[in-house]
Amino acid sequence: MPQPTPTACLALADGTLFYGTGFGATGQTVAELCFNTAMTGYQEIMTDPSYAGQVVTFTFPHVGNVGVNPEDDETADPVAAGMVVKWDPTTPSNWRAAEPLKTWLERRGRIGIGGIDTRRLTRAIRRQGAPHVAIAHDPEGKFDIEALIESARGFSGLVGLDLARDVTCAQSYRWDEMRWAWPEGYARQEAPKHKVVALDYGAKRNILRCLASAGCDVTVLPATATAEEVLAHNPDGVFLSNGPGDPAATGQYAVPMIREILDRTELPLFGICLGHQMLALALGAKTIKMNHGHHGANHPVKDLETGKVEITSMNHGFTVDSQTLPKGVKETHVSLFDGSNCGIRMSERPVFSVQYHPEASPGPQDSYYLFERFAAAMAARTELA
Image (tube, rainbow, N blue to C red; front, side, top):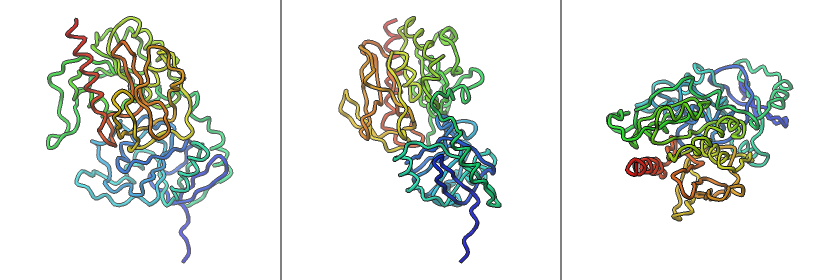
């Protein structure tokens, strides 16, 4: 039987080519390629701002089976540059589905490629590190292969890129929507106990919902907000969100702001993902680029203070170098996959952060207690005052 003409191509910077069936938007784009091992939550992953500048390979083959719906977006539009899957997206079969994945991607301008040997591609990523790629979708199957490879080779990569500026909010706003619960859906926080300022380096909506569910009245500020702007809200605590790009680049403006807040106040401070890395840099540690990063919803993390092992959701390509943590800062969590740092705290102050995502979305909710710990720290400070 004659084989169908490929309508999509994935070109790696080393010249390796993968052909498949395109879906979603047409055209081409360049990015870093990573893989995600989560079995659910492809919509949440595609709309997670931490994936800016990346094409995501899904190792789980069933993608598209629950469709998409507005409630599951983590931000207004997909942020990941594209997606790679083993099988073409299936027809949605879920009562919450509003439209098929293919239609959603096309409408949102994101390219997908199916029919790929994702096992082989994942092995390549693990072996050589997250490669630079060009992904193209043409319904007629016409590709300039040499140009695609050159585009992949010309991609600057994520090192040195401050992508938080690209995904942060344009202006401040209030957030009071809480976590989804049956049968009401998303309820509103009507009796908040703590005022929190959240710095938006690429915040996911479910992180803000978790803060609201923990009793917080949340005001979200852009990534470039100054310490004066943060403190003008008279917060009970400060939250540092997740986000994309090189933490050292974002740290050029975020680190001085965090240091000033630490110097001027005794406020509780909680960071997640990029926010964790921002806090570590502000405290004097360093960050490094990982070979292929951690992306998935099944990552075991050990709490060094309790001995408890949590299964967590992760999405990061940089990590805090635990060997550079200064005196007075403790390593609290480590990855059981590779021993990399996954959490820190100041010894004498309610200032802490984790590399993983305690809000999950997608993933397990073993670590939701961290939001409650943050709320408890604010409550304790209020009682002392």
